[in-house]
Length: 102
Image (cartoon, rainbow, N blue to C red; front, side, top):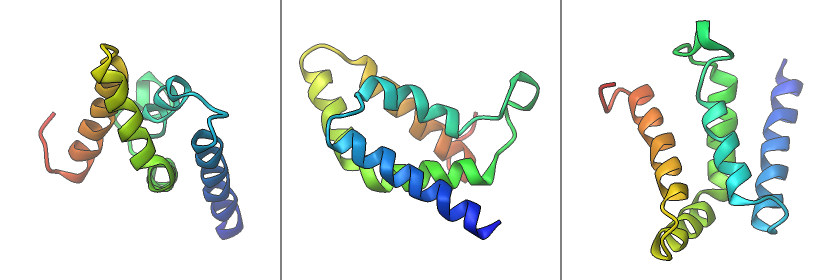
């Protein structure tokens, strides 16, 4: 199980490096990030999958600052959807952490 976890986290780092190298777009990243914070399907939407959350954390460790800067730059030229999507991810994280009510 520990080896599998190591592979998942390695994949997150690899995906993050692809994003930082401009090989994956911000649109794709902002599509994938919320999926790491939600349940598998409608019936389990509010259930927390610890492995997925850990993958989210690893990915944000790698790309967080780049993603923030790029989404702010897009917001400044009138494309606020990236910043809004990222803000929605952080709202989910704050709810999980108990710092915000739903």
